[in-house]
Length: 104
Image (cartoon, rainbow, N blue to C red):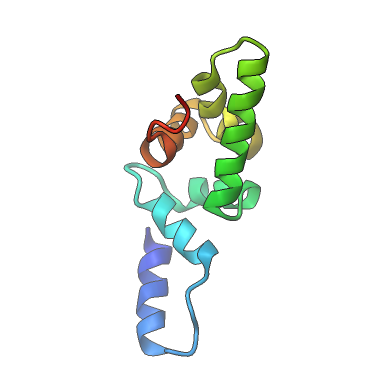
């Protein structure tokens, strides 16, 4: 997204400013196809780090399993429920960034 490009250009000009986890997290989210700055900022407001989101996925999966519900569906809905993303965007983040077999 344009924010990440601007941040990279600024970082080149000013070596004193270090990139934060939040900056990197924003850029990772913006790299998803069709995912813009607005959606990425919604995610970051709810989950400031990838680890915070991972922990929320893990909690949703554990809770769903305990209740006999579909654990993957619960994880895919986390960002819809807690960050206000659309269902397809919420699923996209889970599927593309976090679903590497750890939930099975």
